[in-house]
Image (cartoon, rainbow, N blue to C red; front, side, top):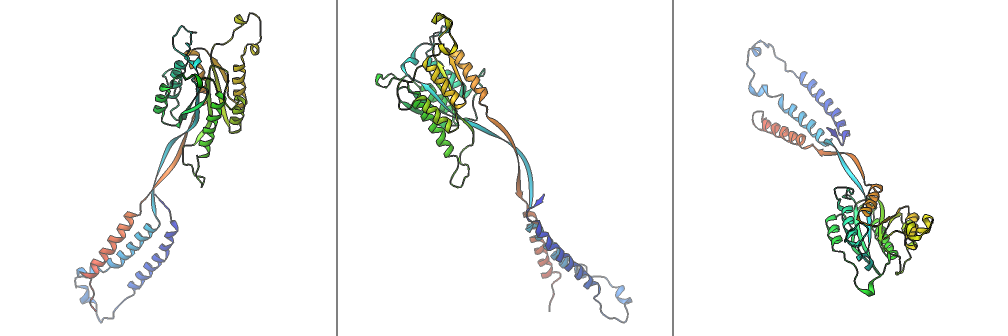
Length: 348
């Protein structure tokens, strides 16, 4: 037990001094008698036997009040685990080319279907390679010719997985295209806005703190429309401290298809070069995927690179314990009043 206001105990010094003086005064009180042998044979009445109680009760009552004023507190130390998560914006291409079969592993699954399954496993876990992101904020931006926020940043991952399953390929010809530059800029703005809304006017945190901000961009084509160039969006993300992980989910060139000995950079398409540049500008990584298995491996790599922190925080919970002392003081005072109005009542 601890006391919040220990300075209240300084009142004990004058109280003890008063008790000592009162006791000395009682010891020296006397009445002159010619002989005491007759009084020694007399019996002490109950009233005489209880005369010491009123001052004692007063003294104990004052002590209890002083202890109550010192604010006794019970302490209980607890350890709480605090998760410092990551804000993740998932960018998924829904242009018409994503309706093509992956084809590289004999599967009839389309690129979009494969991307949706792996994205769902990345968020909720698949029990194998992907452990899930239970403590992270996740949002989704889909894009074809235009970028749309289909799910804002949220900790409700059930909603994220449901929305992911509902994503469809853009089948309107006038809205087909690939604008991942706009999508990256939109996702960066979401992450920046969340960071600005983390604290109120007094600087107090009003929404969960985040460790870092990342964008995972998946596309299978070249940026061919939109108002923001991919490198412009990457520069914006870099300025705001956002890392971009880029994934090219399409067929990769190989030396056998080019018919000669060429360097790795020569094999890269303009799309691959742009995606690699976006990743390098922001401190992320660029990866190539051709089917569900390789795409899952890429997300598993990102899952390992971006880990949420689990920090144990010890804190002490205090509970006020002055009530027993206050009630004791009240009971002692009531007992003193009861004695002075009954057995020990004085009549002038």
